Length: 384
Image (tube, rainbow, N blue to C red; front, top):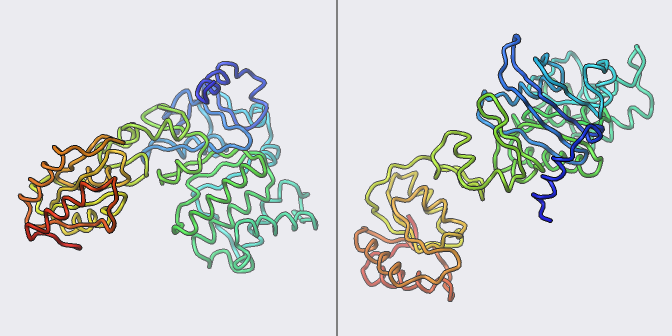
C-alpha cells in the first residue's frame, strides 16, 4: 500500500478517537470582528509531526494561528487540544498543553534573556511565580537546546532580533507542552540562525514527540522541514498534502500568482522575470556549472541561450527561466544530432560563447563538440 493510500485510509477512518492527541480543528471559521475570513478550516497535526501553513501575505495564516492560540475569538467550529475542545479548557489548562511563539515582540522591562525564558514556567508555579530548582533546570536546558547561553544573562531588549527569537523558542520549549504553535519563527533571522532554529524545531518534533503547527514564507525550507503542508488561499485551505505532493507541477506558482517559470518547485529557486530578447551569448553548461553564468548575464541584462541540457538537469529550470532560448533533450535520453545542429546555429547567431563546463565525459560529449565548434569560430570565452 502506498503512502498516499495509507494517509487516505487514515483520513477516512479518523473518528473522535484520533482527536485525542495533537491539535485538531473541525469546521473552524476564523476572521475579525465576526467577519469570516477563512471557513471550514480542517487541520490535524499529530505528535511528532510538523504542519506548515503557506500562502501569500494577507491570506490568513496568522489569523488561523492566532485563533488556535485564542488570541482571536473563533467565529465557528471547534479546536481540539489533546482531545478536549479548547472552549472547555481554562487558559491555565491550555498553557500546560499548548505553547506559542508569535511574530509580535515581547515587551520587557529590565529582564534578562534567562528571566524571559523562565516565564514559560509560570503555568506550573503558584501565584507568586516562584520557580523551583526543577523549573530552573528546564529553563537552562531549553536555553542550551537553542544555543543561546551566551546571551542568557544579557538585557533582553539589547540583544539582536535573532537572539531574541532563539530565547522565545526556548521559552516555549521549557513550557513543556505537547503542542507548539509558531508564527513565522524565522522572521528577523539570518541564514545561519534560520537553519539552526529549524533544525531545533525538527528535533523537538521527533525527540520530544511534540505536535508543531507553524507558518513559513521560505518555500525552500518548507519542503525540507514539514511533514504536511496546508496551503491558504482565498477564503479556504486550498490544498493539504506532503511537501512532495504540494511542490510539484505549477501549483505553487498558481498559489502565489507568479509566472510558472519564476519558481522551481524541485530546488526552491526563485527567478526574476526576464524579457525574452534575441540571445547575444550562448552558454555551454550542465550539472549546475552554468547557473552562476546565467545569473551574471541576467544582472548585466545580456540575453543568452543555453544548452545542451537534459530536462532533468539541475540547472534546466534556471536556464529556462533566465535564458531567451534553451536547447534541451528529454531526461535520460541521448542528445540527438538535431539538437547539436540547433545549438550550433545559435552559436552562429551570437557574438560569443561561454563554456562553463570544466570536464567532459561520455554523457556531455555533445557539449564538447559545441565547445570545439565555438573555438573554431573564434567565439569561445570562459567567463562573462
